[in-house]
Image 1 (spheres, rainbow, N blue to C red):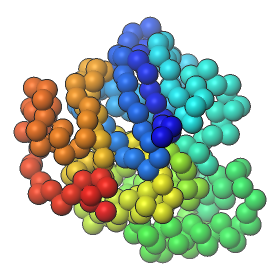
Image 2: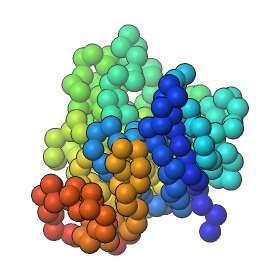
Image 3: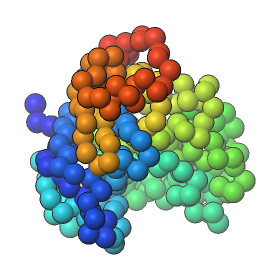
Length: 267
């Protein structure tokens, strides 16, 4: 099987200083990878590099990032922009900050959808309301008419998740997608993301501090420290019988959770 995404010996620098060192990983269609580690370990930097969002100060200085056989590192900006949304979508840690404060949520969702497919405003609104209901936003019509500043942080986070999910991307990159949500909504979001995988074969990279989310969702886990891979393997192996001393320390610092199955087995 040809991999959907493959990183080969990727090193990323900011202002000439390496922050991610020689990372290798591979993701097939429908697979979910959990990326864990302390703050500042390079987790978010990796998914920003996949989307070409490192900014002027960041750069992939070594290695390659392959998406469906094409090298994202060398891809022209126009071609990369065509991938973002329908092919590769991202849920930001603070989705509210990614929303325009002076435009309604409905307008922003419609613009995002219209950029990649022919769709009426009415159909877009109907699809958005259905998706919002699935992730705990029951009053979808009101949310669409609201401005981001009129919504809570948790509601804006779910709006960001909704925008990403609506286009059924092949690859979903999620940076702490549940961190701003209460436990009940976290559960709904995790279940909906797993349903996306089941229905559409969506592959995902989940950056998180929440080991419970990793246990529930991930097929594989990548453990980072100071930008270097300390452990990479199947979730059950890494979480219950880690080999690296840092991973053992990381796992011992979080509450142990009863395993109800991981990745494919947990669906």
